[in-house]
Image 1 (cartoon, rainbow over the protein chains, first blue to last red):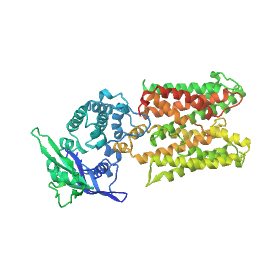
Image 2 (cartoon, rainbow over the protein chains, first blue to last red):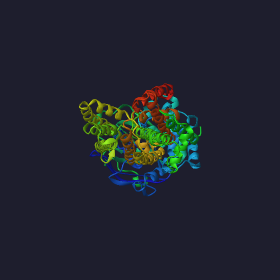
Image 3 (cartoon, helix red, strand yellow):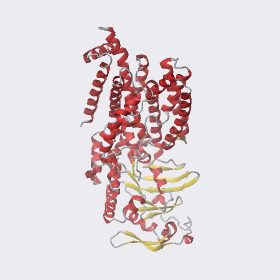
Image 4 (cartoon, rainbow over the protein chains, first blue to last red):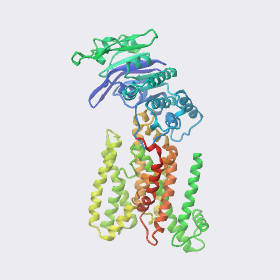
Length: 287
Length: 338
């Protein structure tokens, strides 16, 4: 499915969070949103999965404005994997969590049918979550939870996948553990293999480079640049937007790796990007 | 076990328990006679056979047992819904101030008019108080057209204390007899059940209970958190407002006729959750039936353990329920983790 974001403008508590953001993802594209904390990535995702209504601009799914669709119709097209732990009482079992993906396919009187069963089974298998099916969600490790939430999203049978990855789980918990790095790569492989149009927030630039076809760099709520991975992750952008000295190169195995300098840049050297210094190399509308 | 089979079994248990509850009392009526009399009346026939027996069964015990079942069902289902809607396992049907509002209304009538207006006066005043408290909490808990759970719960607690202050002041000035009536009312009782009043109550309780039981799927989604539920196609704010209105109407109606029966609305949801899991599509209908069964049994005990005196329901609901609940709580391994 094609995702188009046009001239999106969001203000929260009188603070502009997104300013004239535009992007496009063609069917099957995996687009990564990168940028430092507070750059507006998660807010942008919220407008896409219909949680936050923009005061200006539109989010279109195959040309239809998401706010013109009913909540359920929008959720039949878009699924989101969010880092949110529900505060409700009692724990659902893994199979029940995955079955939540069928919510937008039913009204109040709808009962589970064969397609629901099939969608849930397929999602469990695809994400390797079948052995976990009877487990309590609260007893799972971070990596297992990710797989279950992805299975829930796939059970939704969406045509657009929205991934919000906060550093808490992916970076801090898993970076030190070799097995979990493997699990992470498996997760990325899994996402790539679905062929679903994907919009992902990834804090780890290496992971973003591995997963995505295109990147959109956000800073202070504005799109700084957008395009193929190596065109976006230039030493200049890494310095100005992320405040690090770093280079991104494509290694002989075809994988893009980011090599960081020894120290973060001194704060007084950071000028921040100006729109003049980063003309959009690839106009976002033709991303 | 097959979910429909569980429901059928619970229905059978409810029918048996209700029959026993109607048959047992100062005069024991054989179970067969209970069915015969009840069915004749339900079929539109008048009294027949022993008129005294007919009166005991149809005019005194049946309305009371039916009210106990309705109150138990309504409180249990409200508890399940509210715990998920405000995302708080400590929530019960009274979390939005329904009981404090109803108490103030009831105490006003009991102490200022010495209950001279009769049972209906207390009920109407309690219902008015319940509605008043909930409307106040809604207005205070709303911002930008949305109801935020934490603000709502805290507003409910604060409004509860406010009403409690007024209620306590009135109680201090009450005579011992009035005070006893107030105490009895606050702890809940179905002793005053009459057919006339029961018709309205059963229509409200049955429709809201059935309506609430349909929301299993969206309530499950709500367990994943507001943002995730939104991404699953649930209009979270509308759902929350609708469910709060329905549960408030249900709870206000129950409390108006049966007083402030405690424990059922808090513990039955947890009890059913501990035994059957958190999926609302099973949890809601089972809680309705378990709540009804439990309150019918408790009402039976309340009029038999200390004959000829009657105990308020609120004392026994906790006295018998709490130990069983604590046993279940210790047995459940999933509660070991935080």
